[in-house]
Every structure is written in C-alpha cells, then in structure tokens.
Length: 322
Image (cartoon, rainbow, N blue to C red; front, side):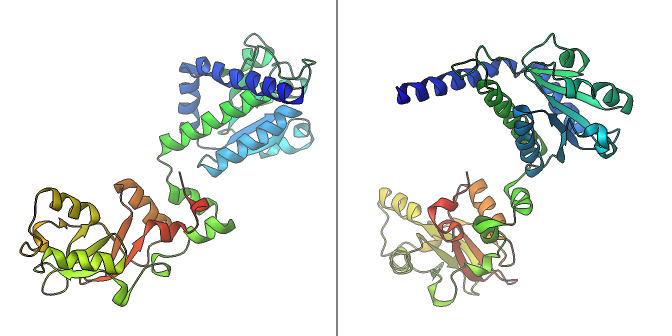
C-alpha cells in the first residue's frame, strides 16, 4: 500500500515534468532574452508553497550568474517594494494565477517599469493577462490523493525554474570557475580554490625522458612513476612533448622497434601545460575541455617542474564535477 502510493506520486510528478516540454517554446526563449538584456535583477515572488519554490529558484539563479532575490508578496506593501528598481525583471509564480497577494502587486510593477514573467498553470488568469511573458506550468492533476496539496504543480514550477536558470547559465557562458567563485564554502569549494602547486608532483617523482632516448626508456619511466605518461624534453631540458599509455599502445600496433626508435618519433608535441599559481578549478576545467587527465607544470624556461593528475585535484570520487 505505502510503496504503491509512493510510486503513484512519483509517476504523476514525472509526467507533470515531462509535459512541460511543450511549454519550452517561443515564450521561454523570450523570457531568456528579456533576462539576459536586464540591467537589474530578477525579482522572484510567490505565496505559500509557490513562495518556497520561488526562494529556491531565486537562489539557483543567483548561484549560476543571474542576480536575483526573493520578494515576499505579503510583505511587499510594508516597505519591501522599495527594494525593486525600474530595470528589474519580475518572475511571479502562481499555479492558479489568481493569488490575491501577487495580483495586488501587478499594478505597481507596471507603473515602476518592470517587465513581468509569470509561471502559471492558468493562461486565462489575471496574472497571465497582466504579464509580459507567460510560461505555462499547467499540470493535469496534483499527486495528492485529495487533489488539494500543491505537489505536482510545485514540482513543475521548480523544474521550469531550473530549466530557466541553466539555459541562462549556458547562454552566459558561465564556467565552473565562475561557479566556484560564488561557492567558496564547503569541502569542494575550498579544494577548488587552492592552487595547482598544492597538489602537483615534483622533483624525482616527475616522469621525464629525453627526446633522443629509445621508447623502451619511456616505457620504464611510465611504469616507474605511475602517472600514465612521461614528459619528453630536449637537450636543454625544455618540454617538447609527452608520451602516454595510449601512444605506446599505438606504437605497438605499428610494430615499433622499442630498442631503436626514439621517443620524439612517437611523442605528442606541444602538450597542455599550466602555471603552478593557477587555481585547481581552472586546471580541472582545462582538462575537461581538452578531454585529458593530466597537465604538466612548467617554469618560465618551459622546463617541467611538476605534473598534476585529475584524480589528485578532485580528491575522493564524490568531489567529481559533472
């Protein structure tokens, strides 16, 4: 009985979210364009359960590059309206579209010069008619067996808020480094704000062979240092390339004579490098962008002074960024 009830709720809410795909249309695109062109902030407002969802949406917007704060609709007429500037965009959330506390604010928003985006399940409501852009979050039924408690409707509003925030994030080109800058607290934030030099392998632990060494020397160095690759340097000690496990496998497939062929013949030239003063977050972003797992740290003379592996930067697996 309990399990069936829980599954029914999840199925109803899952369908509610799936049905929102039809609402990601021109209105959604216009909302994105309006917010991107906004010189102020996104003011989110709602009452009751919609207000709770609104607080979460506002927090997500702010943490992903869109300045925002939540306005308590019921408190607005007691002085909080003074926080709203004419260049702010309003995001009003009301499933019915007839929430009295919100609709009483609409005239003020209009006179103040604010554009209004609404999340509502009633396209013919007062809120919808007085909004500049309406995003439909209609759900066929609530997950509540009584049909009374806001459940599927609040889930739909929350999901649409996430869709809005992430679409804005991607449109702005918001990066992991930007996210970390806004989230310095916590274990992950503290780790990613450290510098590469705090994690790099140095000294005799750096895998290095000369470019005139034979490939077997590279095999031995990779095996000994256990980094999955080795730096290749010229006679002046400058980094000229790397040889990875993958390079060795390809060399084997080509029947390379490891006792005669030089490392410079199979190395990957101009490997990715980073300065030791760079943040861990920047190193991770670079590795993910280039689809690699290691970086070489070089000095001003282009000589390798360290290497760093993605696993070392992320620490335990729960720190992985996706």
